[in-house]
Image (cartoon, one colour):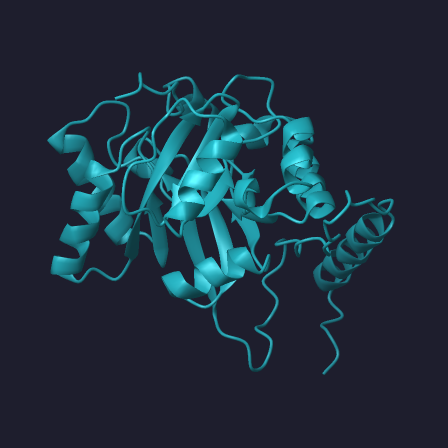
Length: 281
């Protein structure tokens, strides 16, 4: 049936056409040797109806710090409650350089049968930036090179996600290194780049640069909130077809994910909701 002919409907349709023309006009990318150029992730600006025959769209937050800025029973309880109350299907618990708290909360969630699936992860401090290990059985040590850390995650059967890349800070991996890893041994090649991060999203052009690098190198794109407080849970998320952990991991490995989310409010940035990691433990 034809769309509504109302002025609002006509205007929004025209805006969408113009945006699609802008995206289509982007110059083609040249992939490094051995890496495939992938189609850009869909723009998540409109809620189009689901495609017949495809699973529902799932939402996962791949970057949640259950311990917050300091480990306390109060913080753990509040973040856990926020996860239970969220509309997420999956959340990966990624404290800095530790997995013990994540393991405890995952076990608790299984005992209580809560609707959200919690996954053990870790935000690992490497010599060239932060890396998220997703689906870990044990802690990956801090202080290794990014390549060696990726390999250690892969040895556990986990997914290696480069956290908040391309920022001019020491916790962020560089484009040069990520291109180099994309051209090398698969053991040392990350699986995805975090292309939605609610603080980094304030940097002009940052999301687009990360998405273009992922396209160039054949990396998946994912999103995470980097939540250190309950109200930040879910502000950055990974979208995928399905609603299970297995479907999420398969989508990342198959580079069939896209991102959604909102930047942090300015007031939250000044309340240090995104902090430097603690010393290696």
